[in-house]
Image (tube, rainbow, N blue to C red):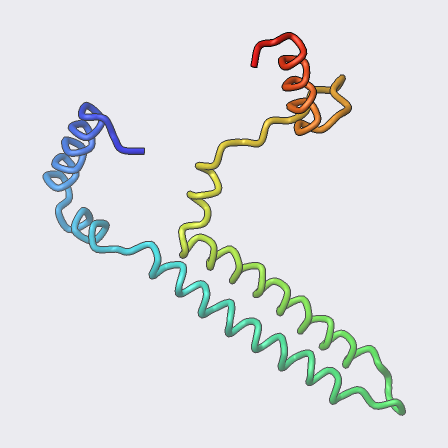
Length: 138
């Protein structure tokens, strides 16, 4: 949604005041691209996921039927948890880098059915059309 003229003027005034107060900070903020930040998080998530795979496989390789299974199992579980956390972090960064968060917030909410309304919306529309036809409104 575009800004109104008044809001745009206020934003310009705030920018000018920021430049006058701290030009170095304002220049740094203006040049920073938010998608670069999320791309860094994607790289970290990929690295964490790869490290989790290595830990998971290392735990499997260290497992020996003759020895205690506590250490290899804990290494494998740690690797899996690292993979899961890295995946979730990467998915969140991917969504934000692609702009998915703003699009989701801009969507209109789906209206909920009323408590007394047992039938789905489509059936209600059909019945309403039928009722109007019977009354001669259409």
